[in-house]
Image 1 (cartoon, rainbow, N blue to C red):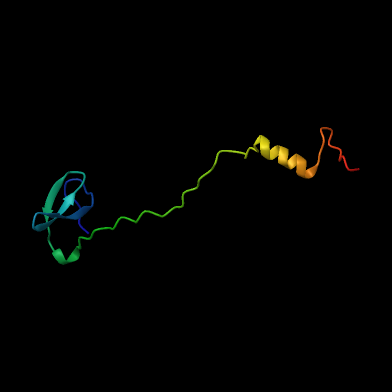
Image 2 (spheres, rainbow, N blue to C red):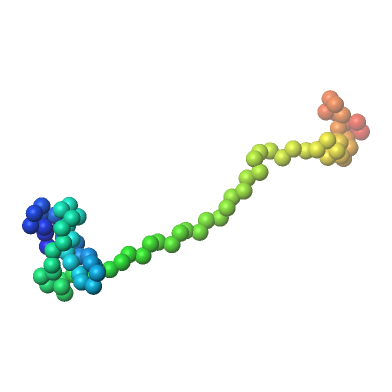
Length: 87
C-alpha cells in the first residue's frame, strides 16, 4: 500500500488512458506506480435487483349487494327481530 506524500491518505490504483496510476482522492493528484504487480484494478458488479411479488389489496371489506342480502335472508329465513319463523 502506498500513501500520498502530501496528505498521507491512501493512494488508490486507477486507469488513466492506457496506463495505470495511483490516485489520491484528497489532493486529486496522480502518482506513477513503483511496483505495478502489487496492485490489481478490478470492477465490482452491481447486485441484481431482487424480485418481488406485487401485492394487490382491494381496499377494505367486501360489500354485499342488496339482492344478495335478500337471498341470504330468504335462505336463512330470518326476521327483523332475529327470531326464526319456523319455531
